[in-house]
Image (cartoon, rainbow, N blue to C red; front, side):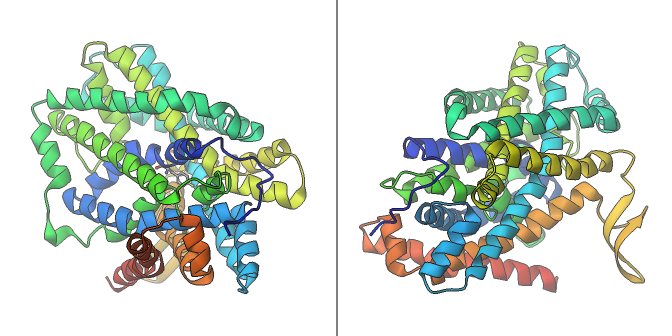
Length: 467
Ligand code: PFF
């Protein structure tokens, strides 16, 4: 029998709303901001190939596992895992994986809010015409001025966290659906416009080759980064998709739904890369510029095309919306859990969690300016140090949280979720939830969940350790 539990938090009207919500979660800064800059840092085509392999062999099976666990459990990820584990005669400690995921999602939100805040600043600067006719140096300088100012960053970080909190406090089902229906297609259209512009730069093919040329020698350089990013971009490994799965109607087909979300997410990332890199090359900029890449290239593009001011403003509004629909999904697992556990109102729980994330986010704000020299995870000649001011190597606060979540916590969470769906839940339970009649197709998906995805994650980890 398909599980007949009911979620106390509500249920989506149809599977389309799940697609909208899950795509809203998946498509975000990861696609438009992070994917291009990581591709730049890890050398282009080799990274893209590893990323695609990780998405399809590992990311999608995890998404499948999370959705079916969520829908069968119909509670917050922590309680869903606990209930289903007990029902299957396994240890309730499986819920610790979801607890870890929940913390990872809150950590991600802490820095995500700071970066999303940059787009608020850019909406105003763009609308104000400050980027009219700007050069690459000018755009770089404008970005530098923004990140050097902790007060300005704090303002936008605070505003974005408030936006996220307000939606979550009201309940996800209400309000968001309508704006998403308009904003998501518009995001695609504007990306295509940008792509059109990049084709006129005369460097389109250079960008294309950078993204898609196969470089076997570099293939292993960014594997762990590609794996981490595959998790980040699909929002898997933390329980966000699981909690959305808990609100999914009973009869909806999970397999095709998850595939749709994965394909949309990948298309947005690739289009963003194809649109941005030709502009980077045309302006003589560095593809390896790091987190500022999008915030420097886009103003150059929009500052130099017809109607650029309007389109650019619109574009940053959409970046904001894409980030917003992702950020709410980071908060939801913890909010659902605390509501279930404490029986306090969503408003109370949301306020406390948002404040917590805001405080941690201040670490990221400072790591771009006065705290840039505060380094964590430092390996020196005398050994390992957790913290050292002004160390040569090491990572600043933002890089540390990003590293800890994407490279370690998300893959571990994802591993636990596929193992749970593949080895703890009964085969029959998985078959009922997936509702796939074709035995061959079911066999393939089940094998991906049970064997391929867990092995993929483990191999990448071991390979990285031995490097
Ligand atoms: N998938 C989002 C992006 O690509 O921007 C980021 C994200 C959302 C990560 C939700 C984790 C999460 F739980």
